[in-house]
Image (cartoon, rainbow, N blue to C red; front, side):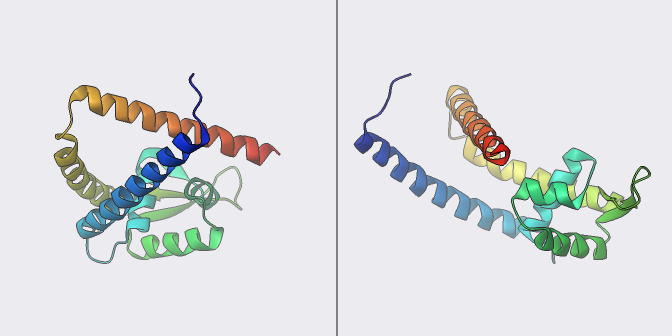
Length: 156
């Protein structure tokens, strides 16, 4: 692997920060516009995660989203009030409450997910298959490096 000098690294970081800021702001705004009435992007993120996980605990959600338990509790309460998730007592440990999507939660997840896929496809269609694969492989590598670093920090 080739190493970079400090100036080159600084330029790459600045380009990354600028592009990341623009992509995240615009993508979040577009996703916010796709949300059904009364659903926030954070609430949908929770629904999306639950859809993939099947069931999980509020502690797991707090870890995944890197937020405090009070923030997750507020999101969970709102999703429960909207009948999008259900709380299930853990059979092994009654102190633990498991969370799972309701049928309505799954329906909302499917609906919004399809709209997000259409939106992102419009952007991805501006790139060749090779460019898309190079991008996603690099982005996944970044996610992997960050995950490993977080695990190492947690062990310290």
